[in-house]
Image 1: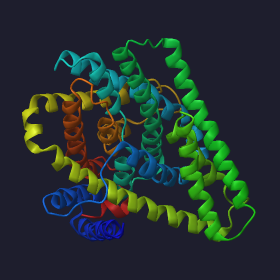
Image 2: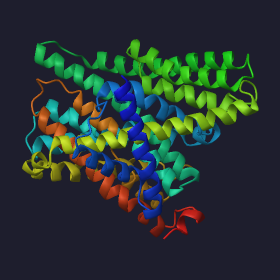
Image 3: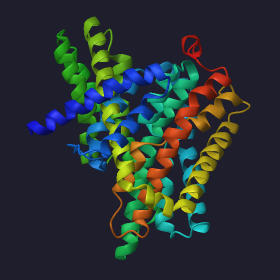
Image 4: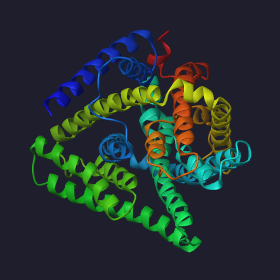
Length: 406
């Protein structure tokens, strides 16, 4: 146990040094951490943790989602909620279907494997997206659209993946899954997750209002973040949506009625640091896992990898442009320049990798799916991540302070 704690401390030390270096080099923090992870994997350093679905879902996602949700203004979110929900549902389905059809007809994967890959790779990862947009200094409606969409479509993908996996397992075991049961499961997971987040978040807010001790207030928000997720997942509801709901509730209604003035400041500082720690560990682990998958495996599947990357980009573009077209004559219209940024800013990350690693061992093409998923994430982080800030600068979307950086 002691050795593991020491190794985690070393990882955090490395992350801090990387943060200093990348700031001087003007490259994304996430890219620097992935490179650090790749470097670590080439040494004799043994990591105390490995990237798994349980680790990402149960340990990493709750604080990241909660911290991002705290900063979302409900009034702004309510104004664009229709757009965000359309992107996070219809958009995800369009992107997933494009990838599924392409992987089935172009590289000849069976329908189950193609569908599962299409779903797990369809969502933009909040870890990567939020980190990139914070570093770029993007503000206003664009940042709200991107961050909120990445958070909400996280929930959509998690639910769809679970349903698709159930159908796949049912098909291999001879069991049937009806369209009615699928719709019921989706509705139950979604609305149940919302109610769970409201109940746990509201309960913690009520208790926080009984004290002005900022340490206790931080503790209650921690319980809200993890508790809402754990309770929802226990009852097979959307844990992501539960934590998101709890975060928005506390972020918008915590003050002045429940959290003290100092408590609000301390809560925000605590969760900002928690997000930094979790982000650091995730990107380092991604770098390590990229090497673990092996360059040879990626090269052997080069045609499949290139096809998947093109399909993912095409699916994302169609999802954004078609969904935004629905609002072209309304007050919710999204500017063309923002649509382009939404397309290229749709980064993939830890969520896709965690879902890929959780695929059943009996699934055809499982190993190939994992290799391809890691390759798509690598392309997303390096190709899109490194060019994203220059794109924002070219399109005139950087904040004044960030635009001044060479």
